[in-house]
Image (cartoon, rainbow, N blue to C red; front, side):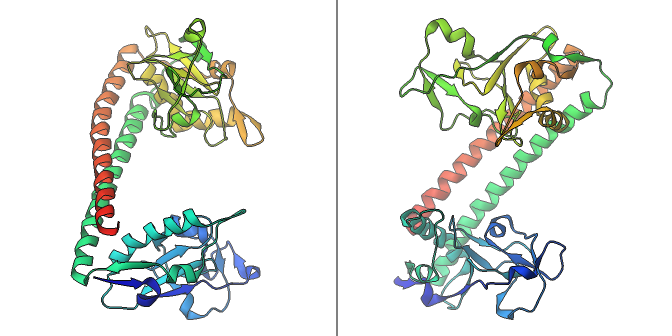
Amino acid sequence: MKKVKLGEVCDILSGYAFKSSQFNDKKIGLPLIRIRDVERGFSDTYFEGAYPEEYLIKNGDLLITMDGSFILKKWEGDLALLNQRVCKIKIMNKSVDEGYISWLIPKFLKEIEDKTPFVTVKHLSVAKIKDISFFLPDIQEQKIISKKLDTIRQIYNFRKKQSEKYNELVKSRFNEMFILNDFSLKRLGELVEEVRYGTSLPATLNGKYGYLRMNNITEDGKLNIQNLKYIDIPEKDLEKYVVRKGDVLFNRTNSIELVGKTCIYELNFDMVIAGYIIRIRTNNNILNSRYLSEFLNFPSTKKFLRNSAKGAVNQANINAKELQDISVPLPPLSLQNEFAEFVAQVDKSQLAIQKSLEELETLKKSLMQEYFG
């Protein structure tokens, strides 16, 4: 196994400084690949004018972003032009497998990024990319390694799509059972036992209780306790801020895109909520908390809440009174409970998918360490 430099086996083409005066958003000319476009796989900026053909990028070409985060990704869009601060990697040696390089290079880019000093934005030079050195096994072994990692990625992506389909299924079932039917509307405040803000106390090291903040509520209405903070709180204040199984958590202050994130708390132990979260305790005789959580997460409700939110600099807010004033369709409790049972079954499937995703991620990291160090 020999050690080589990337510049010895690949051609590195740095993007061209196209004149911004010839940019347009009317889809005249060819799409122009800028840094932000590499990861998302499309560009909404076009260039109208003459260009050197060497800067034409085809679907599947390997690109690296050279400012900010250093990312290697295959171009997923149509024929386009390579703008400055993005470069193309082209394999020039038959002893090198492109798939192998695609898995190998991101590790080195991350190492370079972590070591690169910056004032505002990190910059990557072509010289640094060319200087990346690595051990190169024979072509057959490269292909085997690439195929194994590709297979893991394919299964991972399939599982992710399964999870997305389940989320869509829940939304579809909710729409079918409740939105398309003409149920009477009730003010939310009439259907709950309590609506309360969280505490403004700071997190504490080695605190007794998990401390839920707005980042612990996901955009798709789930509770995420990764990177959980902790807090100590006087026992006399605990009941004000504690959350228990069945409570609905509403993110009252955030950006306009994220304000109103909602989830149901389904863990069997107590936690405490921060001030940007509202705790809703429903009257279980008339309102199922799972039904309420799904209603608040439904696209039309989210749109209404965001339109109602009061704006500030980079923030929007929905207070407890405004939240309680919204109108909620009130189907029979038996129908709400039927929906909640359906969601519980979907959640079991989602849990199995999540476990599979975690195992695949662990396997990928293990193989990456084995193959690339």
